[in-house]
Image (tube, rainbow, N blue to C red; front, side, top):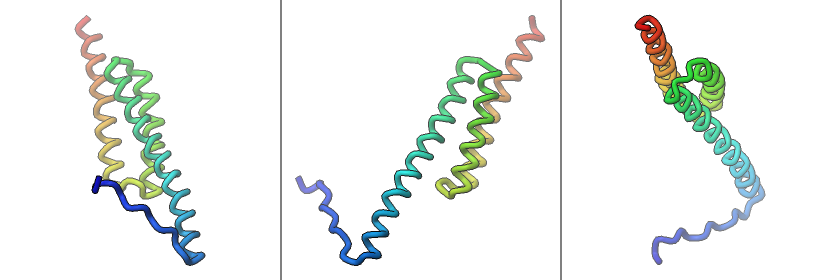
Length: 106
């Protein structure tokens, strides 16, 4: 069982102990935001897969807000945020174009 991680030692200095407390809180906040991001993206993709244009558009607007928040707090790089928004936007736009062509054909 050599793969087990060694137990971390507690810092001796007060500043080190404070840093550990701060890191724990920040890690929890970042994890929560990352989870919100994944959920928002997943919801938009589900709506697109279901073919629900209005729901996809509505969820995309909410996802943009979450993605911008993540980029502003530097959890993800701003270019990654822009790339993700662009890809989601393209999916929503493709859905609306597909619906328009179906209506025109009918």
